[in-house]
Picture 1 (spheres, helix red, strand yellow):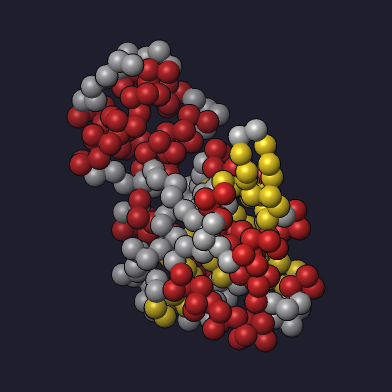
Picture 2: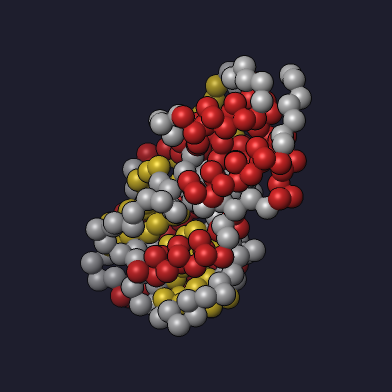
Length: 274
């Protein structure tokens, strides 16, 4: 593989493009990362320079190359029951939510769902804590900008090591063990998968047109890629989709410096709509 150099001018082209398209703000220190992660792709395409790749990226109207670009420069690290303190809080909040939902209908948004661990965790949590889980009308909207991770999420199949830390009761109830030539995998059972609607969605440029509000929104470890104006705008739009008292879950490294008049910090990067 040929090592291709990335000039400051080429890096600036990529930086402006990705910011305009998906709101990701790349600092100047990310130049080496961009070079390292995109070098293989440039070679695969038989291109000689990063400028040629930039032209190829911009000319691709399908959006497929943009998705590959975003996947290359971002990190899709997730796991089941991530941010343990938030699940402890949600267990305490759940009786209040159940009492208020006389129609037994729950609508939840997992924004930036990656390969599906988060929306499936939400369902496993609810199944474990709702004695009449099957009588509830539960729908989770799970969105991400990457077609690659969404394809994996839709299938809902995970390596054995991904589920080894889960309680045995949850594993037995929520997964089917699948044996193949490549080893053992665990696939989320159909009646849980059918409760999740996976969609390709850009949080920065796609419209926030939704039929109903959400009882809670998860957007964890997504805004770390955004600058302050983009975060401010996104949080404001999330607020319009949450009824009073509903929670917004962010990642543990994320916090809000704005919208304090509409969102109250409850702890563990959990905010409540006022």
